[in-house]
Every structure is written in C-alpha cells, then in structure tokens.
Length: 565
Image (cartoon, rainbow, N blue to C red; front, side, top):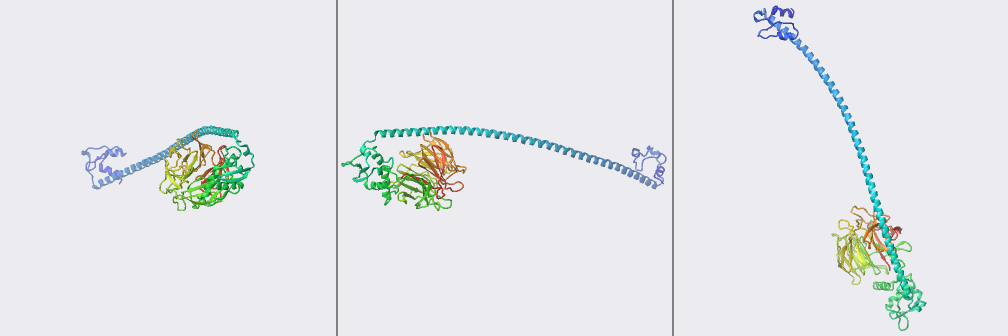
C-alpha cells in the first residue's frame, strides 16, 4: 500500500491534520508543496482504525521530512559551495588586487627613493663642489697672502742684507781711509816680532795669509802698532803659544797637536785672540744616536771640501736623545739614554785638536730627551725626562769653574724640545708635556728669566730640530699630536716676530739634527718610516734645498755640532 493511500485512510477524506498529542503540521506541509491541506475541526477527526496506520503515517512523515531535509541540505550545501567558491574568487581577486597595489606602491616607493638618492647625490655633489671651490678660494687667498708675506719678508731681508753690506763697505772704506798708519811695516817682507819678550823673525807672507786675522790687519797697517825699544813690533802675549801658532802658519796643513787638555784649551783661546782658524771650513760633527737596532757611540765629521763624512774617535758612552753643545773648540755631550733606557747624568767632552773624548762633570739631574745649547761661555741643558717626570729644570755648565749650576726653570715642562741661540738670547721650541706643543720660550741670561713669546709656531712640533740664521729662527720636521711626521719648515723673523712657512724638506723627518754650516742650514738623519742617513742643505736667502752627502751611519736621536776652530 502506498504512503498516500495509508495517509488517506488514516485521516479520511479531508481528514484532520493533527496528530495524536495535539501537534499540527498542515502549515508546514503547505509551505513545502504538499498541497492545500485544511485543518478540520476536532469533531470531524476520525480515530485511527489500527495502530499500524499511525506508525505508517509517522514513517511516511519521517521519510517526507528526511527527504525535505536532504533536499534542503543539498540546496544549502550547493549554496555554501557557491558562497565558498565566490569567496575564494573574491579572495583571489583581492590578493591579485593587493599584489598589484603593492607592486604599484613599491614601484612608486622605489621611484621616490631613486629620486631622493638622485637629489641627495646632486646636493652632495653640489655641496662638495661648493666646499672644493671655497677651499680652493681660501687656499688661493692663503697662498697669495703667504706669497705676499714671503715677498715682503724676502724684500725686507734683502734690504737688511743690503744695509749690512753697505755698512760693511762703509766701515771698510773708513778703515781704508784710516789705514796705512805705518807705511814701512806695510812694505816689509821680513818682520821682527817681540811676543812676550821673545823675538820671532818670519816672513810677512806667513803672517798675513789668513785674511781678517789680527796679524794680517797689523801688518797691513790697519791696526795701531806697539814697538819695543829696538823698534820691533811688540805683542804682549804668551810666547810659547805664539810659537805653536807660528809653526802652524808656516805649515797650515798640520794643525797643532797639544800635549794635554790644558795646552789644547790655551791654544784654542790664543788662536781666538789672533783670529786664526786651524781648518779652512767649519767642522760639522754627527754624534751618537740610534740606528734602529743599537745605540751608537760613533762620531763622524763632514769634509765640506770633499763633500763626504769621515770617522772620528767614538764617544766613551753610547747614547741617544742626549743634549750637546760646542764651546771654545770643544764638543760636549751630556745625559741621554743607552742600553737600559735609563736617563743618564754623565757627560763627556771632545778635544778636537787631540781627537779625544774625556769625561766631563756630570749633570745634577739625570735627563734624556733634553736639548742643549751654548750661550756666552756657558753650556745649557734644558728640560727632558728623568725616567719619571717631564722636567722644567735648566742647568748651566761654566768651563771656568767646571761645574753645573741650576738656573731659572722653563715656564712649561718640556721633553723632546729643540733650542737655538741668537744674539744674547736662548730660544726653546715645542716639545711635549704629555701633549705636544707649539709654544716658544726665550731666556735672558742677564736677568736669569724665561718669557713666553706671544707668537706660537704654526705647527705643533715635538722631536723637531732648529737653527738661527740671518736674524731668523728656523724650526723643521718633528711630530704633531696626530702622529704625523712633518716635512714642513717654518721661520720667524725676529724683527716682525711672525711665523711663516718655507719650502718643505725633501722628506719628512723627526728626531733629526740641524746646524748652521757656512751660508746654509744642514739637516741630517732622523726617522720617518725608516732610519735615515741622508742629509740636505737649506739656503735660507733663496729658499732652496739641495741634497748633501749621506752619513756613514743611519741615525736618529743624535746631535749635530759645528766648530769654527
């Protein structure tokens, strides 16, 4: 039996749509397309004939309801799948749109960044060009100013030199006008001299061979002549020393050979009185130092005529960074350091005529990296380092009393400074007091007082070298606070008291040494990336450097000393 017939029989024709228990379902079936079922009244609803009919009806309802549920579920699933598909399509479109948006924005960002970099590059290039042009303009102004100042200083120096030359010529003219006091002595070929009561007879040519000496001016009639009672020229000096000097004048190729240190000093003093020179050129000595491996005691002398260096007797003590000075025909070396790097206080002196080093009185304070100079008849040791402290103390050695004495200390403690003498003043330049310096101090020995110059050097310099020449102070080389080794040289005219740069050295140097030799400043040795044995001559009047002969040994922390003996 079909479900419809059972349902018809159970409910009757137009039977009620209420199931037992009072629940209705007519409205639900009408909404699902089951036909138009009208709910009858309770009086017309017939009872079920059998219980199975009710169960069949419930089963039919369940099947119908389940079918409806499956259909509805299928439709919902389809709608869900459609919605999911639409969502996936929307998400894919969204991702594509977002990706396209990001690509577009990234392209715009990169374009903006590229534009920004281009603008920054152009701006940096423009600023760099402006800075270069500004620096070039400033450099041109500085160079033009330096050139103008240099031309002015050169002109001033030339005027001073011309004035000095004019004064010398004027003095020479006046001297010539007053000379020939004794015409007989000017024409004599053989001359009798009474020196200290001892009579000497020699040729006139022997006595006048050194131009400018006392004997040459005496025999050319340019000097007041004293005579003894026999009419001989009388000179009130030591006859034994004059005999030695006369022997040298007879054979100038052989300098005197003293018996001892006292005689050597006496001969040098007597030669200074007579204005005699034992050597045709200034003697330039290079002493001690370090060759990069060992401390040196070697000494060499420059043969200016042959342009070469020759060995001399070595120092008794190898030493580096020591003080030194030349005075009265002797060289002095004092302080410094040697193999154990301990500051030394011992000193020694070199007798040039005897070619021999002998001990000298020791310093009161051990010191290394000190500088030394000779002023008047005294030798000065300035500043330095005693192994613990940088020193401001200064001591002076007087050969007459053979002792070192404390004098007024420096205003600033200085180590690795350099010093020079001009006129009656002593100048000390730069150095270090823990920080490298460019200040300058001047010492007045008569007042025993130091003063600081108002004008500092242009460059900071420690371990530099210096010289005084033609009324000008020169400082060259050294190291600054940035550990840069200088090749520059600067000078201060003592009339204008202004520092200016000069032509640079051929190579940078620190721990070098310099000295005035004839009409040039000689710079020798030192170090930059290596220890040097090269030398160079500087002509201050023409601002030019020329290469000199190389020393026998490379050395730094050494000394150069000159003697016009």
